[in-house]
Image (cartoon, rainbow, N blue to C red; front, side, top):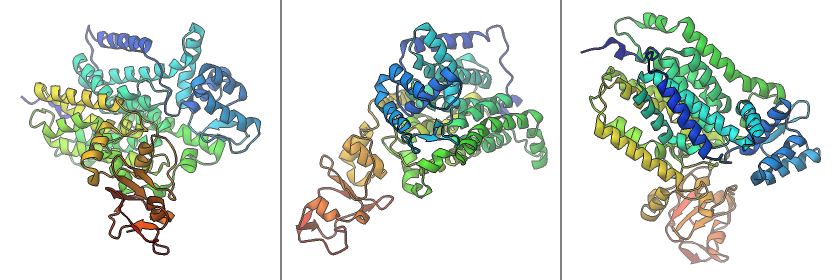
Length: 519
């Protein structure tokens, strides 16, 4: 029998005598996990740690020498990096250590907007008073975001059991990988997904606020304010009512107010950047280059076997592909929903392809890949919400595949090839060509720059990465007086780099003048 409520995503908040049990149980579980786990000092921890100390000690985001002294004592494992900034500040340098910059009055700030550290400042002070490790404050903020996501899922599903499964899926789609990081990836992913769920289920003020918070640290999430209304319009479209009538149902005071609130929260970082640095985004100015955007990076973002989004979504995408006829929620809307969510993902990540550090610190899937995957997870949650009964085999398979994907992501550091990548290099060498920075750094097991005047050779997998524009490729690969064999197969990648698959074949004789390669 048709149920009118199942043609939209708008559900009333769960109101019954047991409604409190899920939040209370979730809170208890999160507190237990918080007590048993430690913060992982990864990502942009140097910047966020000093900003948090600054907020806790003097209520502002500018970094002072006293803040660095506290950082030395509280986080000795990253003290060496603190020292680099301290040395530059004591020397009065205008250009200070990498991820910091002087503002309009000469004070030193992190290039990262201090929204995340501002949230961590209060728990930092409380934990320090209690004698607990104060940098667990980042975990407190991350776990709080997961708690809010749990409430959003409860509203979305109207069922505690389904909300619990939805939260498990979030953790198995990257949430668990970044739950204890001292960087805002978990907050970003949880707030983005919760913002979508709240907005689509009739709580646009909460949805807009959470999306604004997510966008503060990752600005391309601003596209939420375009795609969330489009998603809601699509899912609540009334056939035969006409465009104008359907638009009127969406242009409510609550919806517009939620979008405006979120946009205001999002606007704080560019306004801060304009005031202090004269540009809307200092990170974009210092650490990105539009010339790096390429098809190679786009494919890498989704499908790289080391850090691509596919690594953390195989079960989700498999379930969406295999699920036929089980959804009760207007199945004709499913293709449009997936298309809109995929466009949302692309809108968020294409600007991110311009960052200099593509092989950045990560746990399994790259950090951008984790939070940008949330719209695709939303598609599956919508399918689950619309099914009166869930197909047991499909849901069990989905959970198992995501558990295996998470275990795989936890099994290697970001400066080493993943087990799947090693498998491809061993058995499908001629078909696997990672983005050059990924190959160069993981082959050498370090986080470094990639130089066009060098060659990167893996003897284990008989694979080389070269840039003929840098010159001397033959000499570097073959030695003086020798050159690559004519007809050597060069597989083009990006930024002038080429792969040579298989053993290097060298012949006597100098390279042709100006050739720079043996191709």
